[in-house]
Image (cartoon, rainbow, N blue to C red):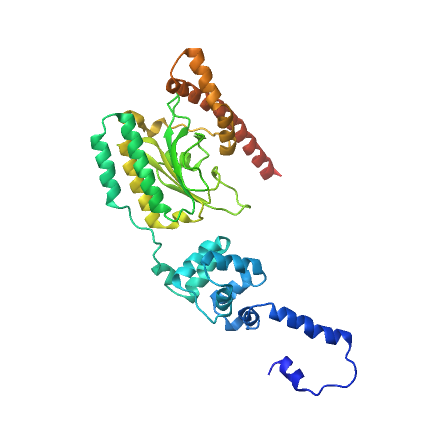
Length: 380
């Protein structure tokens, strides 16, 4: 019998009750009526009566009504459903368990642990919904490769076909994904200093097509993938952790894989997702490799260089680069066309080379300052 029931059975005392005693039940009653029934029950259960999953869910959600509403909205369930999970009177469906990890990425590791403890094998048996690469894209690429005579047109058509298939495959619900090809820049006497973004397709919040072709150096995910000659992935990190690579706008996870033919590199395919841990799925990573291998058919033999020629340098912050390129790129091309009386395509080659040299110097200064600052912090 609860304390409230005990007090109800006692005889009412005569006389005027103190104001504090009279007001308090009214306030409690108003608060209780303002809460869903399941929320009230969630807070009355003892901790040792709950599963690890329900206990952890209470721990991270019980004091934040706004967050509970957000989670319910993201999962497309009612708020009362969340409260029932918290108080252990209902169990989530397998799909909801997987989606809950995506909705609460900051608790991913602990949430995965308690789900595996409470519902053994459920996460392992879940299908991510990601299918393998379909043979239709292989047929399309081979058709383009064997029928288009002009190299530039063939390259453009194959790249477009692969990018469109990849976007539809990886982001059918249009949550936010971008695919970019960065090609190696022409070699200097001491090697290749950077990659340059050449083509891109994206779903919101990324633009549909590439607007400003930034340079990717040794401090980027693409540069690391090129130098190590293998796939590199990045997932969203806590703000307190040090980033090892430059991260572009909107990215919460990314993957980069070198485009190779006969042991030579032509560039790097980069896929950026707004979803954290998108590339934790091995099916996704295997698909990235297949799309990259197909992409190698888009380019000519002279577009590939020995890996030994890579001598990538640090480049400036990507946001700064895009702003600078947007500000001056077109005017520089026009100036070259007028000065040398050459075509726009020829002028772009000159401008690209000039900006690479300028950005490399700026990147070197920024890199040295950053490392000097870090060394000073370590010595203190």
